[in-house]
Image (cartoon, rainbow, N blue to C red; front, side, top):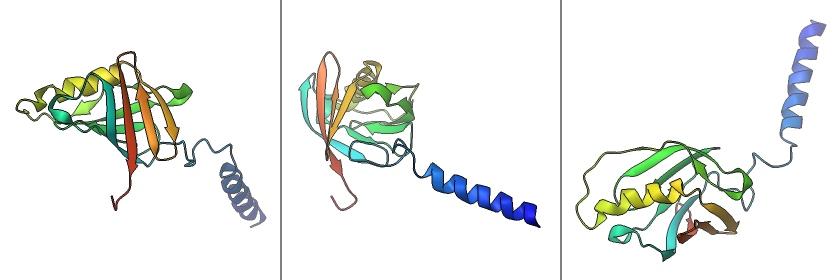
Length: 141
């Protein structure tokens, strides 16, 4: 079975080499994948009902968000320092005032293709009309 040994060796080498890439798919201090954030400051139009914006990146090219009413999930491209969200699916709860405008606020934020920067535990999203500062939350806090 020398052919089978070569296949195993090639597969093993491929696994090792794929782990040695430029770090694009790994988690670095500026990579949002696998992280959860909560807004701590908003400059510009506030979230109706006070929020906060909770934003997580459960997997590569995925995001989940809520600002106090429905929860949004979907695909997103984070390349080039901009979040370009696809069509976001959401729960469909009716939210009473003042939170009834929170969903529109979230949709407007992502429609504006916010620029994102990360500095350790702080994530900042910026559009032409709003800047949102978020702090990373871990399971314990």
